[in-house]
Image 1: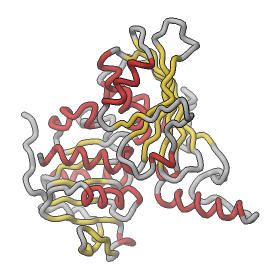
Image 2: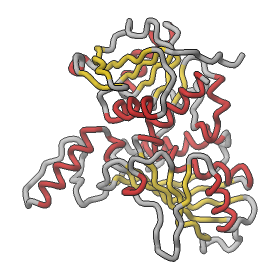
Image 3: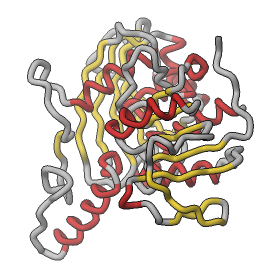
Length: 341
């Protein structure tokens, strides 16, 4: 049986004071999300703080297992540990969770959803819906209309990831380390393992010694297979952090089953939901973090043939998307919107 729609819901944000939590609050307000009441939850150290929603102050409450009584939708963004700890109590209370952590993404009983790709999966939920990894969302949303028309059988992906993916503390460390660098002062990183200002380094998740891939790379591979419903896509990926505040960039070369032209890809991207074509070869103007930051759409450009493939089946593109919005909060709110419409 498909899940029933929720009317006039009570909504809770878990992790309300974090970087994504703040964006969730703003997304709900800007998109005029229909709700009866909004509740804000965070850890004990944030309890008592106030945040503004629709012109009124809301107090942040300490998250407990009793927090979900009467809550219809819970937008979780407080890390996988918190999600695993509090999800059972929330589901038992009748709350539908949209979880932004990695806790449930690969659970076969939990839908993993990008609404522009697999909206119908939302209605198979059993109390939990997983929001995908930010890099996966930004990488594959532009590819879906192409995959539907001409199946993609292989992907080579390189990500250039912003500080926001590591949270508000990493964003602040980038600001502070940049100031120190420009002032000629020494700065010791505390949040990330390497100097961040004017530097780039491999994504700081654990390396699997068997594959040589880090956890971020493995997430994108596994989540792409699940979201596309196609486990046979071959994927090679390298994830890197760059000193940008909040917009991820992604370079993708994809190989289709049949020949495809850059013109066909441009036409499909121009019509793709959630995407905006930015592909001005004359001005050499393509997607950039500065343009993607604060925007709902994923910017897509640099559309060109992969000259290493003489069969005409491969195209290279470059995308930029706001990690806090489409990579996290916006995608979660879009899922929640489907629950109430």
